[in-house]
Image (cartoon, rainbow, N blue to C red; front, side, top):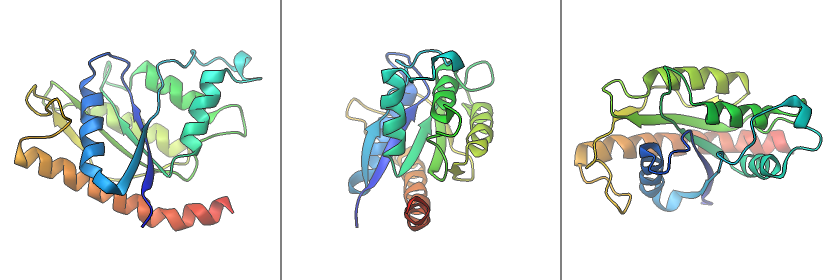
Length: 190
């Protein structure tokens, strides 16, 4: 079975992002089933319709990496009870220019972490609503977790068996979900 080409989009541009650590751990838990590509978003200029023709080189690179992915994993913090500006900006660029969106029909999953107990729950609900309007097929359910410094070690491993089991179940469910959509995606692209 071919590996799932997984585009990973971390909704944080923070140098020591705990969501990037979570994303790395999730990719590791995916093991041999995924070929992951972390898609950079912090170099994208602020979206402006005046700059669509031609799109800036960073935007062209971003759109190409999104389009080359079989599925997309969004790992995001919560900023002011919503999604971070850097992530919303990437979503806007992916949808433009008009008629050249990079998003439709891709399977997607949303997860995130923060130091708070309810973690990124509100941001995830906003993100799922936005992604749904872009034509992505978003995995249902909630997946957020309170981050603790010992949750993920320096090797992107999750030492706690309960946390590892929760995250592994999420990854496995997403891989299965994306795999079931793969034949429909290939047919739509033909």
